[in-house]
Length: 373
Image (tube, rainbow, N blue to C red; front, side, top):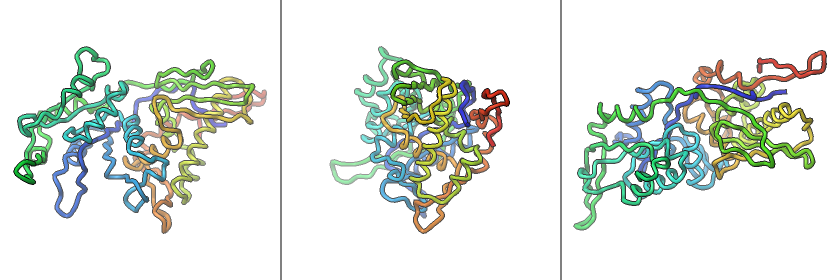
């Protein structure tokens, strides 16, 4: 049977940076001066092993199309769920803050100390736009000297080019752009200092918990087996989930199954069931309990989303950062086959070892075999 490693150390292979901002201007015949496009290009060309995600580039609400994957197909129904998952999966969050909408994003993320510690606000100089974008409320709530442990990690000011659109004598709007549509040296140094990958080794460790009360530690996957009711409860943080899910893509039988043409929801269902199967095997092996007839329930720490939503969105992330290709295979845009790319192979040696095989020896004991092919 397949099990996850009881203790697994790794260097995070994916430096995922989530870029937020005002209304996104999609590329057209005449290329708009979209700041997030410029910043994404700069970060990915400057920092190694860095993947920048702009949601509007890849995903949409409504129906899946050839070019855009629908949140509905991975059970996400509102933007709050989408943004929360994106922020939890990301290593860093950069918000270009200029509007009421981005102020709402700041509030939604910064209220969680786990997220505020990886946030950066990129704001235009107040004098350039004749307005202070970082309001008194934001300063008191999320940049307060009295509570540094829950503050937004970083604020960077840029000095923009300006276009003023006047709608009437009393109403006008300032549109800001990076000077010459480039990231200057000083601004670039500040941004890369914040966004670069921290190569501190991470761990995923399994640990039992009493009465179904998990530890909040992101490294600990807690499990509780109730023999009387035949239930296994597993509590996993997104940080551990994303590396465990990534390891599945190196299993041959898994790759064969996802390569089949299916509706996106069917792919998500399969991935969830495979993940739960290996979690169940792992808990049973560690506890020394026969659990074939037990039911397993997986809860996410620090998230209001469920496992199906988290798995579905992670699949979308892998598509967005080109570790897999979700190739349309029929007339319906939501029928896809999933193909791992060459970029995924780069991490195989390190990540594949997270899953191992336990099998009976001639003496009836469980032995360890590292191959999972």
